[in-house]
Image (cartoon, rainbow, N blue to C red; front, side, top):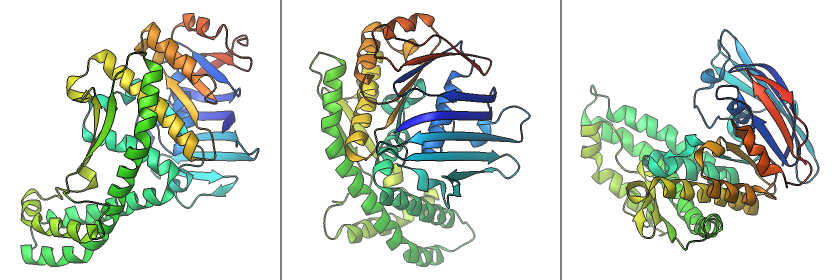
Length: 378
C-alpha cells in the first residue's frame, strides 16, 4: 500500500497541509512541537481510524477550530486507487469517514484495508506498562488480519459493559441480577472463547517472526518468547470450552457482585514477553526494552505483510532521539525494502543516514505546522 497524497486541515497546529508522498521513505525534519508527529498521526487516523498518541479525537482538533478534515489518496499493491476522507465535528462529537466517496457504515469497516505499523515513544508501555497495553497491541494486529475477530471484540465489550452495569446496580437484588445475567452470559462466553482462541493462535504464529526480528536487530543470541496469561482457567481449544467458561462465570458471581465488575475474561488477560526466560516488564534494562520493542514492531510489519494482500506502511516517530547509533542503524537498514516509510526527526544530522539510500526518498522540513521542501535525498 502506498499513500500518494495527504491533506490535513485544522489538526493540532496544521491549518492546511498537503504532502505528495514518495514511494520510498519520507523524512520529516523539524523542532519538537513543529507538527511532525501530527503528519504521522493523520496517516494513522486515515488507515486505522485512530491516532497512536491520543484516543480522543477532540485532542487532535486545532485550537478554536470547529472541525478537522483528513484526506488520503492511496495506491494498492494491485494497482487500484482509493480515496479516504475523515471529518471530525466537535459539536457532534463524532467523525464521519468516506471511502471512495461512499460513507462507511462503521469506522471498524476501515480496519485492515490500509495496514500500518507505527513505532513511537508512545509505544514504550507495550513492554513496560500494564496488561492493557499488550492486549491493545495484540488486538490491533489481529483485527487488521481478521475482521471477524474485531467484531467479536466489539460484541464482547458491548455485553461486558451491560454485565458490569448490572453488577454495579445496588438497587437490584442478587437473585434478580443473577437471573438477568444468565440471558447474557452465554453470548459473552461464546465471544470470549473465540477471542481467546484467536489470541493463542496469533501468539503461536507471531513468535517466530518476533524471534527472527530480534536476531536481526542484535547479533547476540537473546532468547525471546511470548506466553498468554488468561484469567479464565480453561482450554479454549476444547469442545466444551464455552460450557467451562460459563461455569467459571457462575462460580465468580458473588465475587463479581462484591466488586461490581466482571473479574475474569479477555478484558483482563495478558501476554508475557520473556527475554532469556525473564519477564521483560520487570527484569529488562532500558536498552533491552528498546530492543524488544523494535523487534516486536518489525515482527508486526512482517506478520501483516505475510497475512494481508497489502504491504503495511511503516511510521517511525522520533526514533532518532530514542535509539543509540547501533540500534538506529539496524532499524533503518531493516526498514529499507519493507515498503513505504515515514520518519520524523528533530536532528538534521539524520540526513547522513540516507546518504546511500535508494532514489525515491524525500525530505521535508516542518515548522509551526507548515511544510517546506528540501532537496531530494539521493
